[in-house]
Length: 192
Image (cartoon, rainbow, N blue to C red; front, top):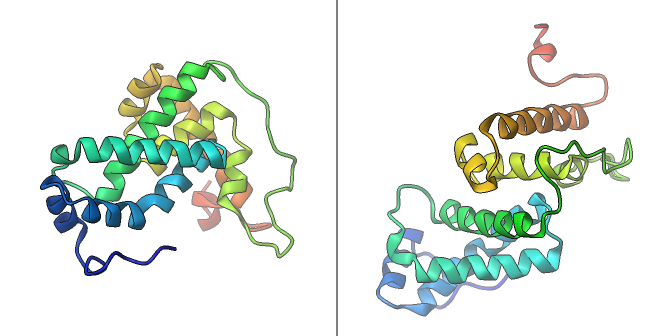
């Protein structure tokens, strides 16, 4: 990871945003340094390959720099820029028409491929098992902080379809990530 720019390493994000609004490119560079990897990780979880994630993250930070005056500090800067990146990914995803949310894609991963050689569970691998529609809906709602309604609007999809994809996707993730022989959720506590 890159080192903080001189004198900016301990500066709070909101102060860096304020400095960026006044045109301080080094302050904005520190925001990019701090949050770039999280933005790229979100994009990869949504389905972008590493090169596309890098490109979209760069585009998201450029858009954030241009719109920095619109950031109100109602939440973390990282969440704000992740939402910008997620919208860029969805726009590209829709433009490329990879899949319609109405289609039911088949499983994309081989059963049992989610446990590494050292028996660690990997959320990123588990996300790859979801259909593209489930993956983007879960990532928007749980990775980028979109509400179901916001995700539906971004995807130009019915609200019920987004909710269904999120529910199915979460159910699949819970099943994949549950410790062997122990279900996750209510069943784990003896509730059916």
